[in-house]
Length: 83
Image (cartoon, rainbow, N blue to C red):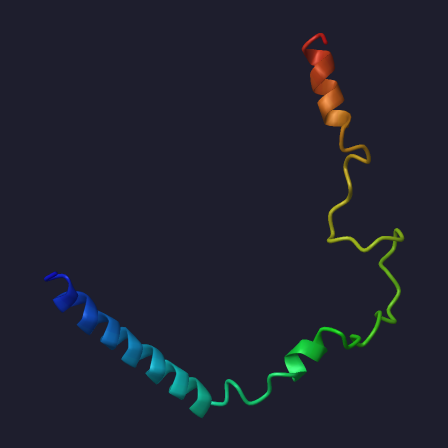
């Protein structure tokens, strides 16, 4: 029963904090436009870039692809183990 002397003031303090946060958000315009963010995901972007890809036909990061077969290393490891 004595825990109520702690929990009731704690609950009231949390209530004051949340109500204060709500009024702060309303005052700073957090709830002004609720519809546009939902429609923004449906709008198209500017479109693809007009610049051609780099030489080699693929966009690269400056590093060459060293192994065209990603499973080749695993096959080589299996052969080393005699499987």
